[in-house]
Image 1 (cartoon, rainbow, N blue to C red):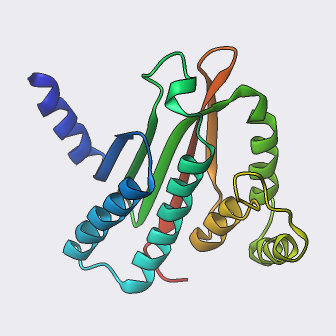
Image 2 (image 1 turned 135 degrees about the horizontal axis):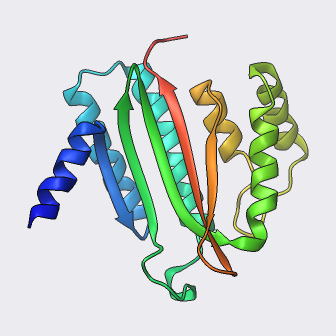
Length: 182
């Protein structure tokens, strides 16, 4: 039972508002958003900041539900998705992680690097270009999620890839939303 206390202390020390591990579905997304809203309301957070945080949360959770490798296709069930929201300094952070196919790592990394190389106007132009000329993938996305996260946060997206085995890689993404209004 000591691990429960250790987990509790870690959450308090890291100022974690919400941590979820497991499969991400539309129903779970709704529940996570509702819990985060209650927590942010208890802090008396500004509506504009809450909207930005929720927008990024929705994008993260949708990316996981659309693009994560289904659990039944994984040989190791311990590699399910994880989602966290917390506070640090004068900002909120949203971190997500999920298994992806290793063959997709390079493409995702290149997209994220391209997004991180752009300024506010460049992100706006890329967003418009994809809306105008983009193709919808088989999973229903046009690649706007990462761009939208960068636009809403005004910050660079932090990401990492940790190999699980030859077939799967764990993809981690962190988005920071400043609490001061820009």
